[in-house]
Image (tube, rainbow, N blue to C red; front, side):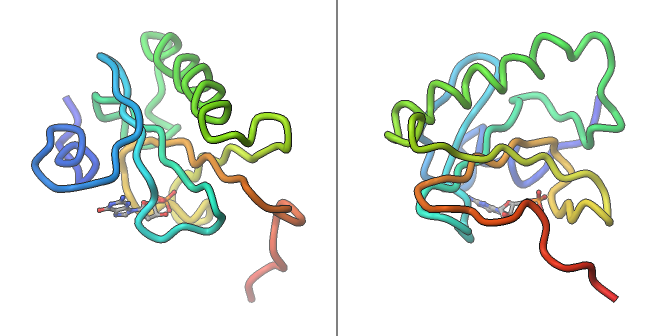
Length: 119
Ligand code: DGP
């Protein structure tokens, strides 16, 4: 099994976070460095380090993350105005925490999907 992460500690209540949703499979909490008025992380309770580690056994939980995202978007009042879901993978994707998570961003116009290429 993959080793615990900072997000595991949040999921298990060992460090504080603004948890807005939790069920047996997933936990959602507000990002510590919000990039938009709504910036929530939706995280599987069991660690999958990156998208590269996803297996056919993970298909149910990976789908569940989207169902939870839709539920939270409604709860946050941004379902109709719109939002963006992002999953970063490894260095070029900008992944910092190696516990797969979906960023749910909304509450303002988010602009183009990518910023200019870094040199
Ligand atoms: P990523 O770059 O996709 O791995 O995103 C990691 C996000 O996690 C980043 O936006 C900041 C957030 N984050 C990191 N540590 C913590 C924490 O301890 N608490 C909360 N709420 N968010 C965190």
